[in-house]
Image 1: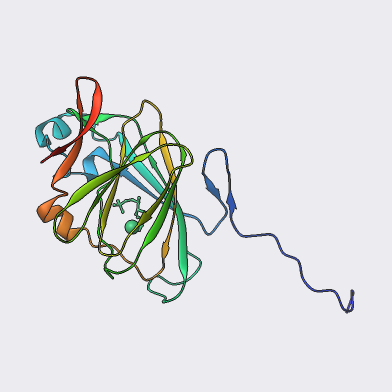
Image 2 (image 1 turned 90 degrees about the vertical axis):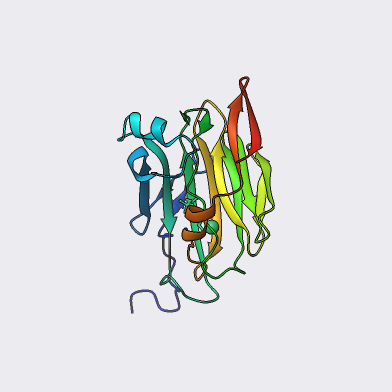
Length: 192
Ligand code: S6P
Ligand code: ZN
């Protein structure tokens, strides 16, 4: 043994860049959602279909150190929602319940401004303001969607259980019951 008694010190596999919220490292996976991927998500489908289909609406970077579905473990990620609108509706994520409905999640804002739209199983919808430093707990059985109401990128960190999974189907069928629209130059949460 070269160094008897010496324990190993290793570099971490992933770096979280605090200024930008980016993740760096070989285990990081990335998903990009373009306008062309978001059919039926925005209120004005005609407007969505007529704008540039290759424009990015949002990107997600994920560090998933265990197999998806592992009980008792965690995933870490970021979501960047670009600035833009489809008609009068701000760019946003698809939104989902977790497939295991009681699984919760934390989001926190790194930069930008927006709204976190949430909906419970009774169909009651509300939104939390997002701003740098804001911290958001997604309760059990609560659908969640991130909306960028600003002129710059909105970047959020997220941490969620590795067995949470995603249920997109219920949102595709019923929506959130409310949308964040620009009305007279201001973001408003209005009934759908
Ligand atoms: C995962 C977590 C986020 C979202 C991301 C994109 O539980 O909530 O990482 O996956 O914000 O949203 P969506 O609705 O397209 O998965
Ligand atoms: Zn989630």
